[in-house]
Image (tube, rainbow, N blue to C red):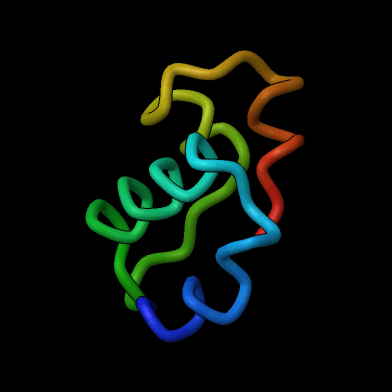
Length: 54
């Protein structure tokens, strides 16, 4: 995870990077999640959850 972020880190804002870390801590590599889970877990509205692309 860290190696991927270090490669693409400059492409993401600090806030997006923090969201990525929080999502990874919650879901890891083993769980599939969608937009509604992102919205709920990160407390984002639909538009904010859609802007977060990995």
